[in-house]
Image (tube, rainbow, N blue to C red):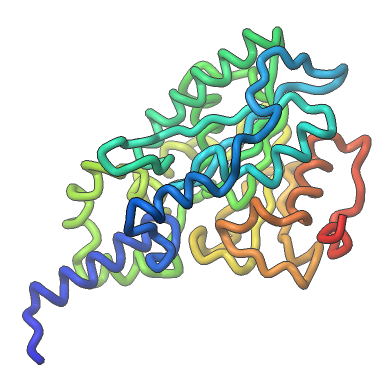
Length: 296
């Protein structure tokens, strides 16, 4: 069997760009039924986006911000626990390009950050609150930072908890580096920018990542914390999840529990990660996050 240079490059480019979709290529839904299954991972989360909820004393509304390609349903493990503990919990699905499907996080990160801004401002107004707490997964872990730094979010976020956040971009397990070396990375960008511009924006050398971290990778007067996993195949190296400023909590999931094998997407299904998030939201009621958390 003979292969032309064009066919080889096309195959390699496709593989690279599928990887840039922030999930393993094998996990991408390829049929309408698969798309529907992804969206129906959770039934309606009872108590979510309840605008009649009023935060208890010392609490703020908690906004959950999902990862690329996911939706608010990805919080089906975390949200019910937070709601049961008395938090007013809200979540949105952002960045949907209807030409592609119901996947979230595809549009430019700037436009998704504006969606978060509009949503959060509405939460603040309807709950009569001055600030919110943010829990963000992957791309969802940087939207609020952009809202605070470049939009109207200054002073509106009290705590920001990143779950495998893409704070400093990614090499995607060195796939980006290899793609650049073979000259197939940049030629493919114009194609992807037509339906999923966020993919290239999350690369560690992108103009967006440089702008996001210009002058510091944190928001002043916000309590930042981040948790990463050493099995992350999307945000690589995993240390790029962390913010490099004093007084910021950066932890590794496996330091809490060596038995935690969670990779990037399943971080929001981990009870150990959930306990870490709960501890960050309210340190006064913190419980040790460890392997025993998996049985709580």
